[in-house]
Image 1 (tube, rainbow, N blue to C red):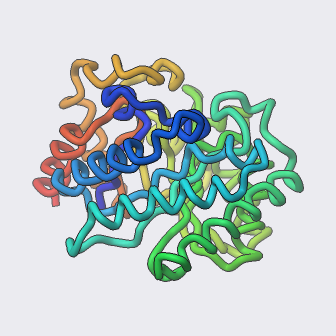
Image 2: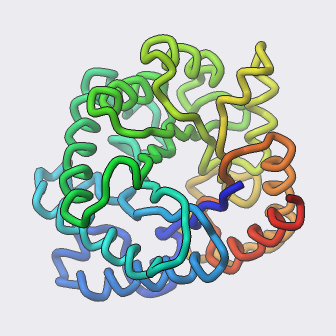
Length: 297
């Protein structure tokens, strides 16, 4: 079982830097930003995480603003910083972490399927171009498209990835009822995507949600074998609204040890491919999660 790198965005504020790449570029802080990315990545490497991630989640505003060259420049910076942190250490495929078109927690703002297809296809194409510049191929990476809260956007981005034949994992954000934030049943959405794309997606995951989200989602499945299509789980560290994590204060949240044990137990019981922590976690937490996962295995 692989342990995913933790979030970059939760650690940036503690370093006095913004995760907003437009702001970084405007203030000429690219060198400091790159150093921060490498330092955070090294923290996760040293913590024992085996599934590295490229911090591309926060690049969406750059595309919205029409700055495609800046998108590529900042993505290249992130990839180079990660490769420096990895050095010659063994690791699994690099996960290119991307987000939804609009706000993660506002499902009504999500695009329709066609618009999602257009936006994400451009994003994927730019990523592939930059990957080629550093000598990475499709076989070296997997696109981890995370915090997706609606069926329509999930379908659009999946169709875009299939058109480009890139490896894809779709990760959903769900509410306390175990359904997508748009109210749709996860099993129904997975079935629709699999039917329309011939099972193209490598697997699905849950992130930026409650510690108990996996069990809540699994309980909604009529076909319990279908739960096996969920291969990853990296929740927030307690049962709260995800927006409460958008502050460095969450890094010092108590009772994380208990939360990490729950995550490791769920991962082990369901034989997940990868596990981790989302908003509010840092590399000390990932190190502890690695210890729990190893001890259970």
